[in-house]
Image (cartoon, rainbow over all chains, first blue to last red; front, side):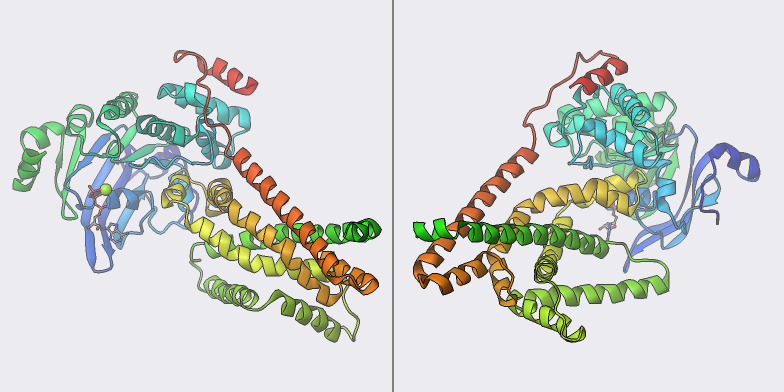
Length: 260
Length: 249
Ligand SMILES: Nc1ncnc2c1ncn2[C@@H]1O[C@H](COP(=O)(O)OP(=O)(O)OP(=O)(O)O)[C@@H](O)[C@H]1O
Ligand SMILES: [Mg+2]
């Protein structure tokens, strides 16, 4: 397998069998932690511009699925294709991760760096931008999440909502093709959930491809164009928000939605 | 006591100089050894079988190094290394100052390896994941994100090692290194004022360790930086003027 991920446009041309609008395709993905089978035969794909929300009860394997996609976890079976290229056996995961960003529940801002340098580190070290360009990029995205005024602050000096907006800006600075979100608002006080969700909504409207694990059903209904409902390590049902929220077919989906 | 101080001030200052030199360099080199070992120990398991075996062997060697040097007295290590070198070299001994620096450095390195490892382990896993998620490699993650935080956290332990080294270099008198304690012994043979001389030297040691402790604590506080930050401009300012303001202040 080629170690260098070719830019999407080229792959679209060279790989005619593949629909070029599909960015990520997950095929028969399985993941065990020892005896514990956490993901079973997962199949789905993400199109360019899709906002996919993954919902489901705690322990259903949502985080594990997301972590498999950016190679934080090694799948036990199956494949993950990025623009048609199998990345599961990839030698250099950093090459994938610079195109598939991730936003965490716990923010994971770098505690030793201020807001500006949090956002500049990736562009500087991974994209090899010079200082001025990295700073310009950082400021652009910090501004877009409304955090430009806080460039000098250290993470510990920010509220949860502010931290998460900086974390989103930091991920955007890499200009990723897909952004993964793992319960980005679950660690926030209720009054801060809104500011983060509205930031994410704006990104969705700008056409960013997003894969969001969330318990915020309002956001899923409103913003997503594709919903995946998981339970017990399998995809129970997927479809448009209308299909899942208004006309769910499976009993388990109905039961889950009635509770949340 | 004052007389001794006046008469032997140059010798005492030379002793202080050597003591501080070997303590400072030993601590710095020891810290570098500790960081290298700490980073080596956190390298993810190599995929290549052969490299994996090599890394395992390296692990065993480092463990042996750390355990042996922590498990034997530095005075004995000094003798073994100093005379061991002479034996291998047809009776020709290594320069005493160089020997002293080497002994204190590798002894300190063994302690620092554990301190640094503890510092790295104590860093939240999220810091690694945050960096990896951007596409940073393991070494970029270590040097840009993890080590700066780990080093800040272990600074009190590193300071402590430095203070310990100021005192423990006194054992180097066994190889004839002219540090403070060696100077004291020398003064006693000339003056026969045993008590006064050692009391004086005790005071000098204390002044050294106490002032260094204070200095390092001051540096620690400085490193934590500002408690407050300045919110720049108005919320609606454009990116360019922000950058300007950041660069100005
Ligand atoms: N590193 C791990 N080692 C062992 N088991 C794990 C590990 N990570 C997750 N699991 C297990 O895998 C299952 C699925 O976990 P996962 O975190 O993916 O669920 P989730 O759907 O994200 O749940 P939540 O909504 O609570 O975040 C759980 O039973 C969990 O205990
Ligand atoms: Mg989860």
